[in-house]
Length: 153
Image 1: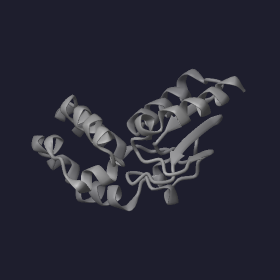
Image 2: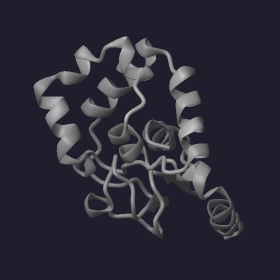
Image 3: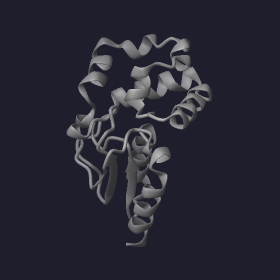
Image 4: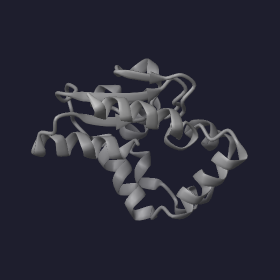
């Protein structure tokens, strides 16, 4: 998810797997949406306060696609377990990442309701209807079936 997709993309350049699967991520730097480009150019990511990872707001939940009480609880636990130093570093790497074209043999799974990386910016191989950025949790059964199909090829 997100940063993990970028790591998978970079690793695939080294190990040349049969296929690489990314979920709720971007496959090129051109897919970075306007709101993250703004963060990049204004260098706002350098000023992320520690308190940011403790904020529980409707806007943050909306961006992440945390709609139910259970999804919000899972997201809150993710935030609680996230180290601010790592978070700042990961955001910085994401914003500086350069990848002109999708890698070979890429399977890109993306939700139609992802607000972090909107589908309108994404060229992907599989769209999960109504899937948000947290769909690895909220749509896990559907994703599991899709992943099994992709891995059986």
